[in-house]
Length: 324
Image 1 (cartoon, rainbow, N blue to C red):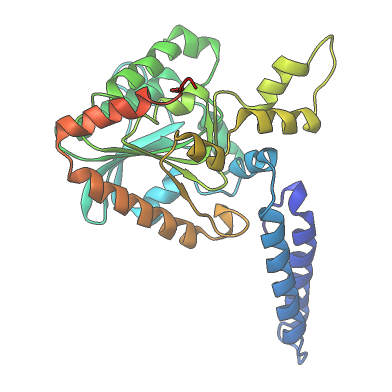
Image 2 (image 1 turned 45 degrees about the vertical axis):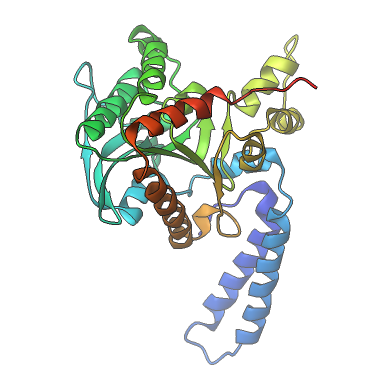
């Protein structure tokens, strides 16, 4: 049973009717195949129509979809022999970030990414994908191991943001993120960062300094969430903000993959199955695999000095303007 967002309700009604018809026909001498096929085509066409014109706010909701593939799903479906490493060698292990080594198309690589958790219990354990400083320090430790052994780094970004709790701040949350940003520019091995869901603020950027930055079609990447932006701009004298304000904030933030590709912030948009990545894991993984293979092949040919220089220039040029 799929979880449907509000704007998907028309599709939900059709697909539930299809399932009901299939149950009625199961094991009975009733031929309703033609009716089922007709409804399936109608549901597919309706889904295509809905997703051809979804708003930035709706894309934000898609990026947060609870059935969307997470880092460990990609590690399982895309990689071979994934071995997870734990701990930052200073304080503790942070389950909000998973990190380890695997093989991709026969090439040994490091795999690092946010993990939100699937069940309620797991989400609590993983702090809903909001890392503490030890998570970022663990990620950097694995990146430096990858550099030592000449292994490319794949990062997968999916977080509302770094955890803003008192303990995290006391242990140096800002410093840990800044250290990652600083050191990732100097890691002497290819880095490919992919926003697989929600890319929130510095918590996302701390894993996203890469030679290539990729985004799934229905993922988002922004300095602040639409809710946070709306609260700052429109919440005054106790007034509440709602979906209307979230829609306006989402539009203004330009947080979609399509917007960011136009600005040159990301390098490629990875297509998703109609209805989102969660509708078909296999097709999603195939699309990601193709793009990762293409960029990894290109980057492995580059000398280290050129790799680092181009990575630096890539981020230096972001936000550059020309005077007319």
